[in-house]
Image 1: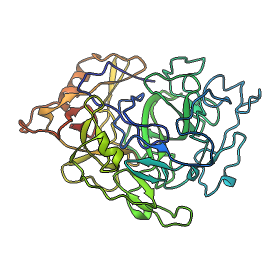
Image 2: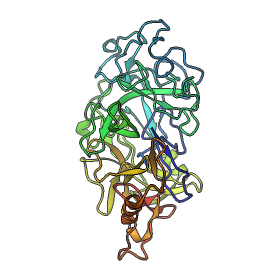
Image 3: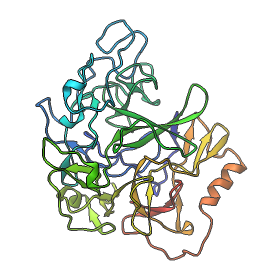
Image 4: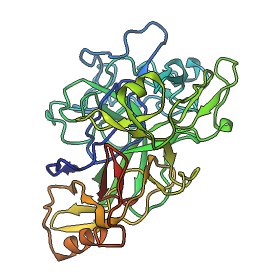
Length: 389
């Protein structure tokens, strides 16, 4: 399991991609990732409760003793639900725990209202807590937990804690699971044009390091968007949401902005949580529509994973992973982001580790470069160095 080293003040402030209950601010996930547009919330659905949900989990999904407690509270093996299955209506999502179609739950981000997943899939309702990111076996939520089935990678869902910095028992949202390898091969598990938002790396039973994430949107063009309730939808590309109510932006990518601009729909603003200022960004997908000239699609995949007393250097981002476009900057201007540590590794594991990190910060001819206001030139990811709010 990945644990983060203490984060320097200048390092990346990770953000969750569009999600139903990631409202405002930034969230520190298990892997130090900058993950596209944040701040999504439920804006309407079926009268099943408020977007902020709350309360404890009422059934045994994602966590606990998966061998003895089922989702319906029985003593049988946990029944796997239909999370991640393509759907057009709730009737296609029959399961013991009442999965429904994601099209029931619109989101809003930067003033845009629409579907978080262009290809609707079955899932447990995101309007209230429905999985356990910190079960009794892991009360501090240090490990990744799975849901809509046994609490292991065989299940179709991944449990995202409401508060990633301090997971609490029963307070999580079950999202469709996706995986990605360290060799840069395409992410798997999401139905196109849905994309994989990376969350964490952890060892598999075979010892291989596997990346886990969750499926959400990131439409890139109108053709990605099916009609919504019979109404033609278009793609709001800066937030990756399919909508029937397009929003005209008053600010362009790269313009200075504040969280108020985000709330007003002036642009998809990514502000520094401490200062409240940042610049307008747009979402991206590795292998998809290119970022503007001079910008890079950064999924937050680290350049080096620290594993025990050694390291694993990553060189390629996985096609199909979602990220955000950030301005590229010279390595000579970069500060180092927090290292990513797997299985209790150490940050000073040896000369090879130091050489890998030094290479990312090698001097070049970029002295004097300035990132947009409210951002810092940061190294440490495969896509970097780039300017991070």
